[in-house]
Amino acid sequence: MSVSKMRRVVVESPFKGDLERNKRYLESCLRDCVLNRGESPYASHKMLTDCLDDDKPEERQLGIEAGFVWKQDGELTAFYVDLGWSDGMKLARDYCREAGHRYHVRELPPHDVFWLEESKRKEKKHD
Image 1 (cartoon, rainbow, N blue to C red):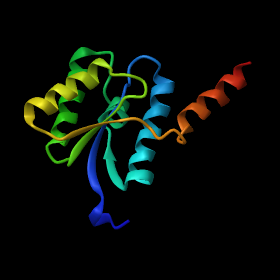
Image 2 (tube, rainbow, N blue to C red):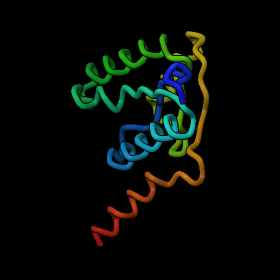
Image 3 (cartoon, rainbow, N blue to C red):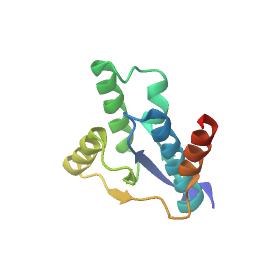
C-alpha cells in the first residue's frame, strides 16, 4: 500500500485495569490498522502513558486532551470494543459526537488472536 493512501486513524481501546492484557490488546488493534486496513494509527494511551502518570487525575486529563488534539487531524477515530467500553473511551466517543468527528466501532477479526495467544503463553509460564 502506498503511504499516500494510508488513512490517519486515532485508536481508542481500554487502558486502565488489567494493564498487561490491555497493552497487548492495543498492540493487536494497531496491527489490525496497519496490516489489515492499510491505516496509519495513533494511540495516545500507548505513547503518553510512558511519560504521564495515569493515576494522577491532572496528568491523565492532560493526556486525554492531548489525544483529542490528534482527532482534529485524523480521518477517523477507531473504537476497538472487544473488551467493552472504558470510561476514557466513552469520553472520547462523546467528544467525537460533539465535535462532529467521524468514528467507527470495531472488533478485531476472529482470526487475530495475537493478544489472546500472548496472554495464554504468560499464563502457562506461571503454572
